[in-house]
Amino acid sequence: MKKTIIFDTAIGTSNIGDIVILESLETQLEELLKQCFVVRYATHLKNFNFLTYLRLRAKRRYADECDYKFIMGTNLLSYDIFNTRRQWQIGLLTWPLYKNVIVAGVGTTQGRRRLTAYSKWIYKRILSKKYIHSVRDEESRELLESIGIRAINTGCPTLWKLTPEFCSQIPTEKASQCAFSLSGFKDQLDRKKDGEMLKILQQNYKTLYFWCQTTEDEKYLDSFPDTKDIPRIYNLDVFGALLDKGDIDYIGTRLHGGIFALQHKVRSIIISIDHRAAGFHDTNNIVCLKREEIDKLDAMLNGTIRTEIVLKQENIDRWKAQFITGRE
Image (cartoon, rainbow, N blue to C red; front, side, top):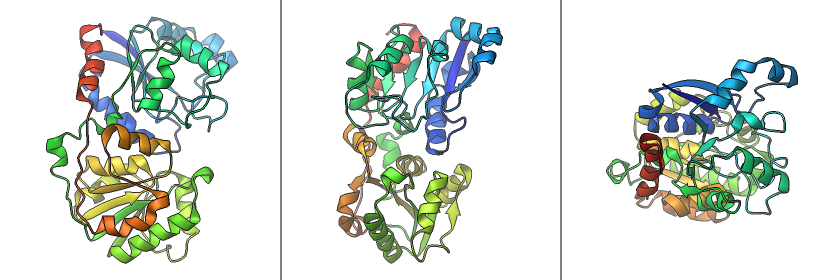
């Protein structure tokens, strides 16, 4: 039996995209995990306060003794741990729980900047030096390697199943329906461009559905005119069932909403609003359109779109092999 901790990035998350990543990773690691005794700790919530940390010796001992610790995806890495949305609750009290952790398909939450001394201190103490880490873009790889941590760019694990054979089954021509998304976080709003996107979709599709990946997204949609009658989807199972019916496209600024659609063989265009979608495009060739070029969306919708995901299969196999052979 291998003792394992999964630092579950979906516990306490306000972004359903984290669930898409977690479930994709657990599928990819299924052969390993079914041989393990797995305990789940959170990343988005604090695992212990001071008193419980002192009292719960068994949980601390398990963390010290376990064979594997995995942080399961999402954009937890940061150049400044204190200057983020605080989705990673790690600090001076709890960092020992993460000692020798392995990141799996993790990205960065900020664009390139100078790494703070405190962030560097944390990473060098918690990240395993025995194993190579899996990151989802070149920026994240360069961040870790700049402090002496070995990492390879595997792309995001949500894409690992999108082989050429799989992608060949994704339609290339426009459907009659569309599931779309808008990002409601304050630092991601652009009313002018998002309003233009919404008008283009209303002109091109008979039926629209809105994918609510966070609670902020619906509030943002409601701020636009003529949107109250658009059906909303809040649940991944419901979303998956809709996508599986076919005759539907996905267009939107929510990156993992689009990747979830691709997993269901739906033609998808990600509207790129930050470095994350750009990194996915550079690494894996996902179909993207920069939001500042939203005037090109109509032509894209009415043209032929071929989904040709490029997988870093050698890197993926190399990373996985560590947990089969026990060595890189």
